[in-house]
Amino acid sequence: MKFSFYGAARSVTGSRHLLEVPGFRLLFDCGLFQGRREEAVRRNRDLGFEPKSVAAVLLSHAHIDHSGILPVLPRQGFSGKVYLTRASADLAGIMLEDSARVQENDCRYVNKQEKRRGKTCIHPFYDGDDVKKIAKRFEGSRYGEQLKIAPRVTASFHDAGHILGSAAVRVKYTARGNTTTVLFSGDLGRSHMPILRDPEPPPPCDVLILESTYGDRLHEQPGEEMKKKAQDLIAHAREHRSKIIVPAFAVGRTRHPECYDEETLKTFSSGGDVFASRYIRFISSPEDSKRLNAMRGPCVIISSSGMCEGGRVIHHLKHAIQDEANVIMFVGFQAEHTLGRKLVEGWDVVPIFGVPTKRRAQIVKLNGLSAHADRNDLLAYVRAISPRPSTIFIVHGEEKQALSLGAAIQAEHPKIDVRIPHQSSTHEV
Ligand SMILES: [Zn+2]
Ligand SMILES: [Zn+2]
Image (cartoon, rainbow, N blue to C red; front, side):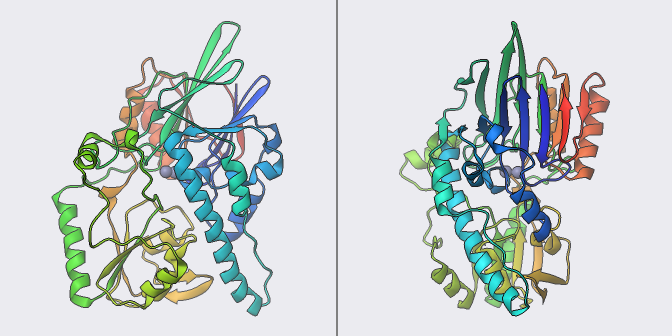
């Protein structure tokens, strides 16, 4: 069995892992790389492997850093299926359409400015037609269902409790009476969080590909302290009639009751709507978005993308960032070299659409709302696999996080072969 890592290797974005067995190649995830513009263009134009040679894609979840470059596959000769959970199929369809629109708008906006400076134009990676083509190849399945994806290969999805439809993906390969099982964790969620069910205990596997986003960090619990922090911010916005901008992954209101936890199901079955409130308005058109920029606070604007690397949130930031009464609140992980990361690190001047812009708005980080497992959760996940895997690949974490988690796993389980793959490296197991 051969494993090649073409993204999210010692980094967090652009999740793409290729698994090769005799006569069959499959890809776990096909994510968009986000980061410095030149690097993003290079890594999203050249995927690192031949899509033509890949027979199937298994998608862990709909987040763009896992699904966002899928639409280029058919143009590059991919003719297989994309296996994913049913909720992911709906969600990925919506998110990829949104991503195509966002790329188109961002390119138009940037090109207008670049032309003035005599620079070359940039182009979207794909358009709405490409999204339709790849969506036709989606094969939505239920959690736990055994899928035969090739004569000697089966696959199944196991609830990862991270976002709607998210899954750890298990692949079984049988040859000459021997079965080898690979488990790809995807992004793992946390237990006892609202709305979604807790991650399922991991099924047995020989090889584990494990995420490490928070490989050396522990989250604060989403308790009273965090509630107080949020209340203080809202009081501040009220007093100053200012805005709180929350960059977030667009997850929409797709309803898939099979993914919800008991509490949420109860709310729905008693006729309630967990998302409904007379204070919440859903806005979809760019015109309405623009009106928000002109509007005075107090208000909370939740807008994509989560790492401020595209999408309308950049326009909202552009309008709000220079006012010290405004607040930019981060609830998710910010990858290296993204605008979100620069803001979280407290940069005073940040590039917005390539223009250095003074930041006066307050930056707040709420880690307790993270949809990612922390170091203890990840260690517990490995401990829960019985019997233990013989090999673990640590992915989807910046180098420091991946190395730290790798060392902790190795110390606890000396017999496991723990590897931290480099970008574009191939490993035989
Ligand atoms: Zn994710
Ligand atoms: Zn991710």
